[in-house]
Image 1 (cartoon, helix red, strand yellow):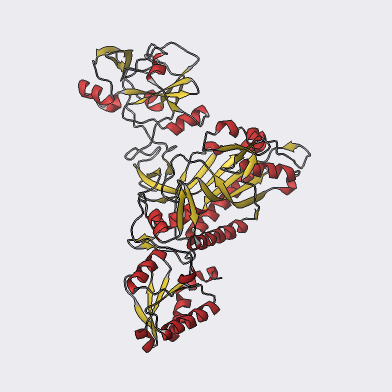
Image 2 (image 1 turned 120 degrees about the vertical axis):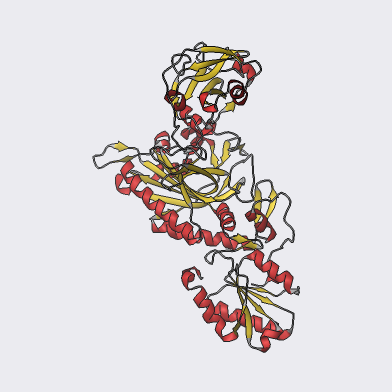
Length: 572
């Protein structure tokens, strides 16, 4: 392929609004072009990389008995109503009517469609287990598109779904999928952090995320310093290191104008851990009051999971006051029972004692307040956000928080979809049973961006050989006839041996060509000029290395074979 014939345009300056290296370099290198917020066109260089990613994933999915299918993007609303997600999911699920007035959706995931397919063919336990997968366009009306391909509205996912006779059978297959994911990312030069994660709208009982540590990541991961624990911050657990003393007498204390934990602590000379604060949410018209130790923060996802809800909004002051609660001096002390009020307490309050809490009276707090004696709650649970410095549960190690980009996830879905949508099979005794499911996803464009995040320098991406758009970039210096003819000869020779070559045949200065070469990140760059032609040599440079060397014309093939020996199976 010649540059002069390739649909590509490089940019000299960083695009406005692009901050992540992958976003910058994918735009500057001509891999993608933004059409609108969260919508990107993929150009030939980018498409070649995406195709290589799909090939690797397809090989690993087939290796664990996957069967490839292709399901519709546009789907009737009925299957989403069957699963219960049509009303549970907010505006990120794009709803529309077709020309007949029928309610439809653009799928953001394919659990409903895959379950509908499975129930149409599944009848006997003898058909189980099986796994089906696809590479499919999705649409999620993402409110915060960012980072180029990291968070977009339209994207291609590899989603796989397995069906099993039992939870034990799912557990065994889950381990196979886990190992397949490790192989996929290893082949792409990524060593992911693997964390337990929230199942979210997917449902299910267990999920793992494969994360790339990055300062630009959108998620926070909690890792123990000894490497024995890892989880997404949303669900991470930790030791409260609580200190309990004998209950003291409740005391009312004037705290005029002191509404925040910091203000109260400064006034009374206390530490934050000696206080309790109240955090309020509006849950579909029900006021949810979460009480938690003053030095901790509420983990909203944990509250959502406890309430089995995907939507939780901050409560307004007017709504809070309707229940006899005074914002700024709030707690559940003296609050009357109300069907529309639910009070939750973090375990930190059950494990500790003698807290300072709001008196529900303007300008006053209560000292030495204790759970159940002085303030009531409906439920006690883990509602706190793990952060750096917290102690690991059942261990001596401290936890640290790092930022990461999700590059893949796997779920034990259980029977959430098969049960609600009536998928079943007859067991060996002829009894009707419900299959259990697993789900395994990878965002293809996001993974390409993650690889660029993981492997780049100050000049552009450094593509791992299995993913590079071409094996070799051949740059001509000058437009002399003999140089161009020799370049064509080299291209033919390399292509005959299975190497994919990009020939930079443009009439441009060497500096321009070499800067573009860095943006394209092709593993091996050869340069041919009138000077090297005279000595029957070419310049050889490996992307990411500072120096180049001269190689005799006869040695080029052998050197390429040696360079690519570890990735030979990725050649065409």
